[in-house]
Amino acid sequence: MNLRLSPDAVRVRLSRSELDLLLVTGEVGASTLLPPDREYTYRVVLDDDVPGLLLDTTENGIRLRLPGTHARELAARLPSREGIAVQQTDGRGKTLDLSLEVDLHGRRNKTSQQHKA
Image 1 (cartoon, rainbow, N blue to C red):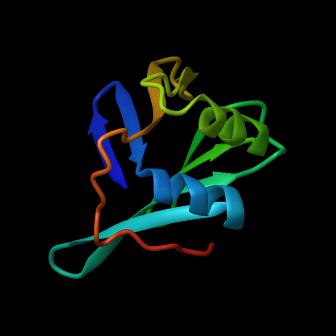
Image 2 (image 1 turned 60 degrees about the vertical axis):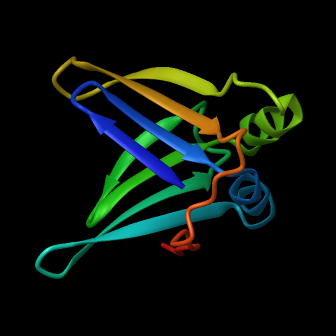
């Protein structure tokens, strides 16, 4: 799993195997250990109670939620460069671009692991 953060955007890129795991288990995640000893987690979770791609913060990271139908539609479109992209407005009225993509080149992050809430 690859996470890219910028002041106005969050992009998550999954490998095909991570997308498959998401479809089977409903969740896929990874973490990065930050100095001195703080784990930052990032997860993608299937949640049929949300209308589309939605970003939440957690105590130690972020969680990207989407309905299972959206994830299955994304998988059905592969191999396509088109991911899921939306804009989310924060509490101050600023817009954040969110995107979920699948890596078509097959790169895999060896540190990816599933995290449970």
